Length: 337
Ligand code: WQD
Image 1 (cartoon, protein in one colour):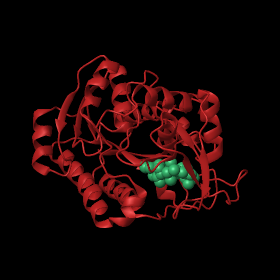
Image 2: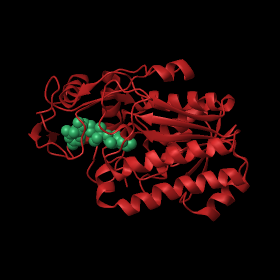
Image 3: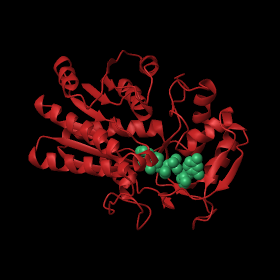
């Protein structure tokens, strides 16, 4: 089967491409490289043991996407392409709504035109906003606190309505918790442009000497050590979850939302200490004010993924910290953008 990965040169997309190749799928990647590097393509082929077709393409470009679907016999799509910085989305909402909604709409309309009826969507736990209860299951109320989250929420709704209108369409809405880590080879990993928004890439840049110290955003939350608690999941476990979701979608039309998390919550300082212990590196930090929009505690109820997909995260926090450092120390400047 030929699988199109929009945004497939990105962090989650590249790790998913490797797992798809290893599972015997053929991979086509469409990526505008606005937040990734073409170097990733050769590394995916190195790790997956096979070539991939790459199109440098803005997924919002209808003509480009139509040409791709005409040239390639696409069986299913995994939709990663989109802007994903929460803070940036608050500052530039129109850019986020235009880009992320246009990408989703262009993909779905091109799929419809070419008779492709399977899409796995890169959604996010951010659609849960500030959860009433933790762990969070898929029935939890969804309400977003930023434009980025609303683009995920609205894309989910579009796919839900599309499935009602087309009973052959299968949409898997994968709600990621906090992906971290890297492929054990150290050849692919997270390479954010500019100052990292997220915790683990910031920690690894402190470790490699690119940043002086970590700012811990608040230690006055109602959590065991006062710092924010999240459900960190190894990016390779997450990638394998996409392969499992694709397999399920092949025989299950309709719209299915699934949490991809471990079901365990770790605080910011838990992660700092785990990184220090796994790698023997001191991470200097300073406690600063809370970051606006942050929730106190968020972790998944992962049961539905195991029940429907037969998938459960397996890697430990130590694996995540060790693999993160292995990537960073082998690629001090990421892919060298
Ligand atoms: C984790 C914890 C911070 C950075 C976001 C998006 C989510 C997904 C993952 C895209 C929090 C603390 C962080 C730092 C810190 N992205 N922190 N210092 O905010 O849970 O989720 O990224 O899909 O949709 O919402 O992840 O890594 O930014 O923060 O103290 O320099 O680390 O306060 O408690 P978050 P994060």
